[in-house]
Amino acid sequence: MNCDEQRLIILKSSSRLLADRPFEAIKVGNIAEFCGMPDTAVLEHFSSMHELGSAILTYEGESMRAMQAKAAADQPDPLKRIPLVFRLVGENLAHDIIVRAGIRIAAESHHCFIERKINPFRTWEKFLVSTLQESIELGLIAASTDVEEAAWLVTVAGLGTKDLLSFSGKWNEAPELLEKSATLALRTIICIHPERGESR
Image (cartoon, rainbow, N blue to C red):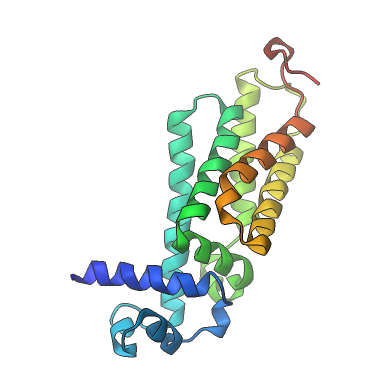
């Protein structure tokens, strides 16, 4: 097993622990025990819990950006792209334990990583404002649409659904529920262009 493979094993194994327990309650010794290896083996790759947590956050952030890029490549219609991004993020949450650990750390322990300036709300709101503005420019929604207000609502719907999934532990339902939350939020607030036959 090479160095990169062992590092990934530690990331995945520690994420199973960190997805279920608060970051600040976990020590390197807990990680080593959970991974079935001595403390020194973990410390060879991650010198501290902060470094390990930061690696998980980096992985999670990169995966989310990758889903946004995939949706942009696969779906040229920005209005359809938004629910697609939410579904793809849901698939990440359903199937990737490192992503789930990163989501929990970002939500509960962001104050431990001040240098990263973690703000999931701001990140998603920025993406949505940009995508909704593109929808206006393409004539897909009315020019009078308040994109800031719409972005706020869709973001809150998505983050609320994520919290519900975290509470229930039903991560297998994440793709469907996140896509649904985005679709319903958009339908509630946006006046669809009449030519699309979907105005409210």
